Image (cartoon, rainbow, N blue to C red; front, side):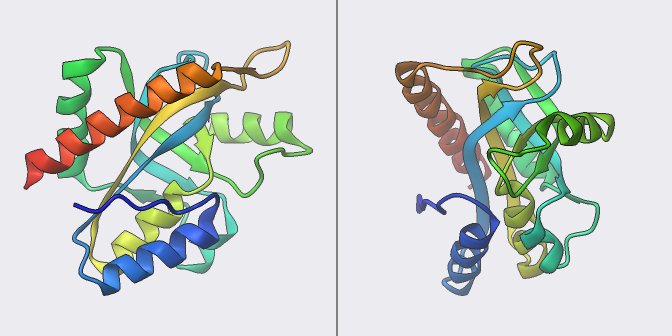
Length: 181
């Protein structure tokens, strides 16, 4: 098992995934953070991605269509691993975007929410698209560090809470990958 940082955004994630596939990777699991769009999703929650909306440039350039699905077996392994450590988690659609600070965030968030997105982030659609194109089992596990659906603006976990959430994400991710062998 290799743990590799991809950096921020689709372009760097694509480079890393392509090179890992060249080295023989059989599974990609993006573990990272996201901002919640859906009011049911709160700070500190886990989100297991069933599919990512390809609203970023990189996944579209790589052949991503409207949405790209995660591997079903890896999703099930993530659910099992998450249930053992954090009973409240979400499974569903997220959206990958290009901008962290979007000048038309309210409009874009409303559009993505209408398409069923629970949350947004910047790499999942690219990782899933490269995985699909390269025949590598792929999925995504996210931790909610920001809530974007509040009328009074964005709320964010503290630095210590983000570290704690990162440790939880890592434990769930490792357990899921190990369960699949």
